[in-house]
Amino acid sequence: MNKKTVEDIDVSGKKVLVRCDFNVPFDENGNIADPKRINEALKTIKYLVDHKAKVILCSHLGRPKGEFNPKYSLAPVAEYLSKALGQEVKMAKDVIGESAKSIAASLQDGEVELIENVRFHNEETKNNPDFAKELASMAEIYVNDAFGTAHRAHASTEGVSHYLPSVCGYLIQKEITVMGGALQDPKRPFVAILGGAKVSDKIGVIDNLISKVDTLIIGGGMAYTFLKALGHPIGTSICEEDKLELAKTTMENAEKNGVKFLLPLDNKVGKEYKPDTESMAVPSDDIPDGWMGLDIGPKTIESFTEAIKGAGTVVWNGPMGVSEWENFAAGTIGVAKAVAESGAISIIGGGDSAAAVEKLGFADKMTHISTGGGASLEFLEGLELPGIACLNEK
Ligand SMILES: Nc1ncnc2c1ncn2[C@@H]1O[C@H](COP(=O)(O)OP(=O)(O)O)[C@@H](O)[C@H]1O
Ligand SMILES: O=C(OP(=O)(O)O)[C@H](O)COP(=O)(O)O
Image (cartoon, rainbow, N blue to C red; front, side, top):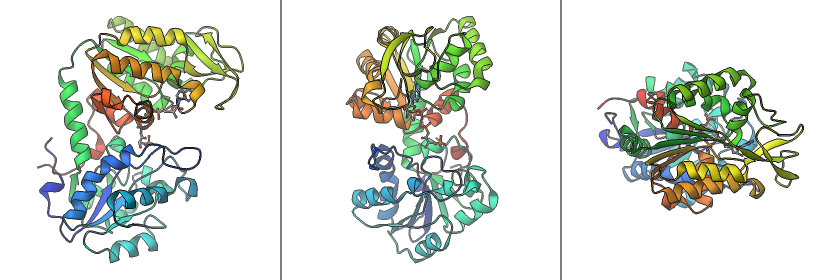
């Protein structure tokens, strides 16, 4: 990679704004369910602390609607970081207000501050230049290490780079190097598995993947838009109505290109979106009214497992169902097991997919667990990620 890194710039005594992706999953008790994204950011933060920088950390968490919401506060992350670093991480009460700025101004060399969720301001996702300038005004150097958010051109991931010398951290470096290596000339057959719930974000990617992969497997919430596009009833399953045409074209393109395209054969459906809802397995062309697909069914697990067996490279992004809930985790467990046993070079992307693989104990069987879902997919498509493109060249 030809971008400058933290090692290419003198950080000693300087205020350094570091964009991390601390968008971690929480459990029902409000505890961090998987701290992987925080742990992966530690190398850069420790480097800056050891080299006597004044470290100002920032991140988003979830998708708050541009206003303060305690549910999306980064305070639990500051607590976790304080323990992991063995020193206090000073939590600001705001993003660019009095609290954030006064803590930043009083930081001593090697001290660390975490400002509040940047998405408490609408200007963040709009990449508003005035907001970016305000963020930048707290620091002298910008470090982007938020790989999971590098596909977003937001104020804290791209905008600030217009006002500060900008370099990347170790996590971004690692992600690009490992994934770039595996995907440059992928071992075949190349199998992509897509699931999860961010349908509109990821459905466009699928079309682009057709020229790259040999097999495309669609499960999770993603599948129902495709099943509906085929004319099947999908009950109350999640669906992107305005993407039905795109789903149809994608399936036609897959056929034209000789790509094996697999959708669920059956599904575990639930009455309500609840962990203990009444459930049953039904064929994909027969989801009854008032029921929603919350996991792939047993026949599908078999068919996906068969397709994954013998793969040379597997890229997997997005769980096969609501894997946070025991009743609807079987599909994700089955696919994780199949990938782990395939012996393929395996790249897992996405906060929820990574959390599922870790929780299920398959993490050490995978070649690489990326901290980015959407970001790793865009990287895989060959797109330039705006959060990386904006950094200074070597
Ligand atoms: N059939 C489904 N219906 C509703 N939500 C689903 C379904 N399948 C998966 N999900 C949800 O998708 C979420 C993860 O989606 P996404 O953010 O796209 O994946 P990742 O974080 O791995 O990139 C999980 O919270 C999971 O509960
Ligand atoms: O969780 C994230 O992405 P992912 O679900 O694609 O892995 C990133 O933190 C980006 O979050 P966003 O999709 O709300 O911009």
